[in-house]
Image 1 (tube, one colour):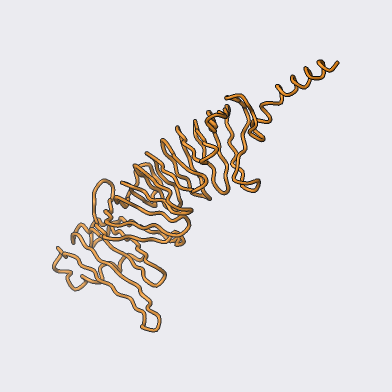
Image 2 (image 1 turned 135 degrees about the horizontal axis):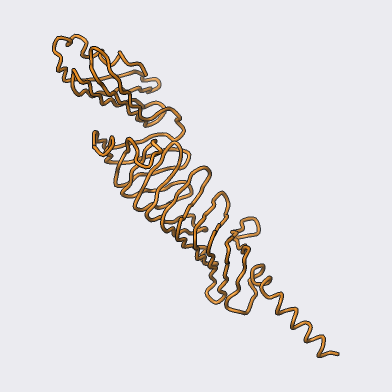
Length: 295
């Protein structure tokens, strides 16, 4: 009878082994497979949940490998991919194939992502970003802090088309989630043509107004025309617009305006605008030409 009870306990232990492996990580076998999920965490209040069609736990390596329809949930972040390797000790993950990293309403995607859930830092290769109203593409994206992403050899735009009408291109663009976009040495492209160079660019993500506007048309005085306005923003007390225009009967024109508020030192509005004025007979309207179109 004693041997019979020992046998029953042995059989029960064998069948309970997978449950112990994913719950308390006590399994003695090297590989345990599941078709639901594994939950790991820094504490009971901060679990990391790994879902996938196939989830494997390699105990000797301290590694979880999930494949097909993989989803990792942690705090306010969701990572999805075709395949993920997750190290339980370092809390680092390497994801491959249709990778998406979602934080709040912002989506970062790429071919491969290396991310550490403890340090909250990582790298995305060959991808882009959707952080409305901003969209972008980059050869490499680094998540360097809780809410900052650095995009290398990249562009950003507010046009959500696959081939945007315009874009701001730079070697490095910094996106601060829910706050602002910054870049140095920026080239502005309309279509495939560079039209403007800016040594520094900053725009608030809290500002919902249109950032770039393009107004085409035709009238008797100008002929065919295209007026463009690009809004720039340093802070609430320092902002303005840059204008780049073309009129069939008058040629190219460019200008800028600037609103500032220096508190007790005063506030004001500055504007400069220059046109080549090919139509000399209308030279008296040189400065006020743009007033024919209201924004």
